[in-house]
Amino acid sequence: MLAEWVAVESDSIQPQLRAEVTQMVKIAAASLQDLGANVMLHDIGIQQLSGGQNISLPPVILAKLGEDPLKPTVCFYGHVDVMPAKTQDGWKTPPYNLTEIDGDLFGRGATDDKGPVLAWINAVNAFKALNIDIPVNIKFLIEGMEEAGSLGLEQLVEKEKDCFFSNVDYIVISDNIWLSTTKPALTYGTRGNACFSVQVEGGEKDLHSGSVGGIVQEPMSDLIALLDSLVNSCGHILIPGIYDDVVPFTEEEKKQYELIEFDLKGYKANIGVKEIIYHTKEEIFSHLWRLPSLSIHGIEGAFYEPGIKTVIPSRVIGKFSIRQVPHMDLIKVECQVKKYLENIFSERKSSNKLTVSMQMGAKPWVANINDPQYEAAKKAIKKGLNSFYHGNWFCLEQY
Image (cartoon, rainbow, N blue to C red; front, side, top):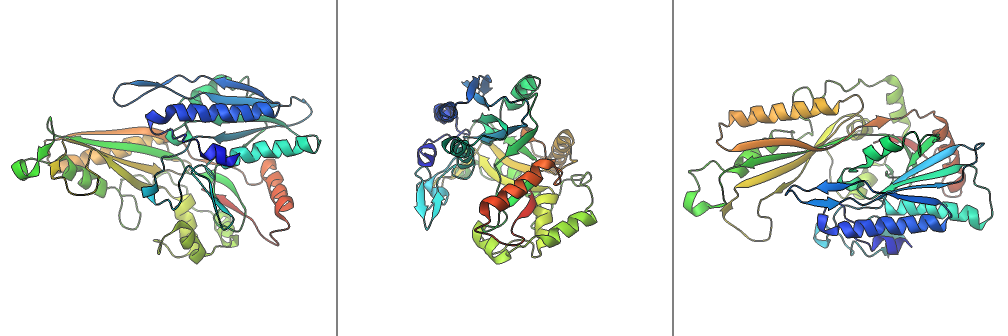
């Protein structure tokens, strides 16, 4: 079944593939119905694109299985949309064709997050096939716009908080990764994500560099300067005040880091790089989990095909994101970014027009690792994988 799910190009970023996303949501809904779950597809409205067009958002699945008042209720969250994937991005296999290589499965969504959603469905199926009573009531929240910022989801959750979600005791998310490829992990926190666009607009049309190069202030030059001002070569964010709300490290956290086994060589091989900026596990963990980071993702409006096109774009848009940690406020981060870029832009004394906007914002979170559901998860992992791992074989990770 995973191969069938991976084959659906449910890319939520590209509007022209929205029908594929909706189809994937309906496929997941049908699988839940086959379990005997009560499945509801909720309409969450429309999305307005940057060009002004409106496009329907895919429905969100709310499903429930079991309503025993003596049992706790666990809600599983997952998503069935994916990020864009093309062979030229570095895929060694067709991204929408599930391929097995040396026992590993490769395909867009196999890990994030179609595979985990199917794992929960298969787990329930196993209970039913063995005629074993499921010890909890189960609810499912499955969406198709997570990769695009979970558009419409917050409003639906708010609407259903006193109804569908009113009796939920625990929430489980299986949309994370392990620090190691050999040891299981429990994630107890994630950084948030504030996504920005920086638009620099010049004249009314693209120009030829052979005709006017050297006499106009080029939007691309302004944009490159702005993007270059955001972060230094060591990954330190240069926006004033961005680290002000980061809580100092505690001794308890430092001790937790010391207990985590970490193979630096294996980690670099797994992510496909020769070197990383930091060399001790404490530095690496803190910059992965405990400190904000800034990444530049792309430029829209610039020529990117092979070959040379000697054009001066009239309008370019840079895209970057800041992964913020708990206690950082999204609104404050947005103000800090806008003020900083506007100051840098004014120093260039450019006649072009600058527009900075936050396109998407997700809050960070961190949980208590001693919470009952984490204790239950530890026991479940040990019991399920005991034949493969021994000793102190799993770690707690904060992303």
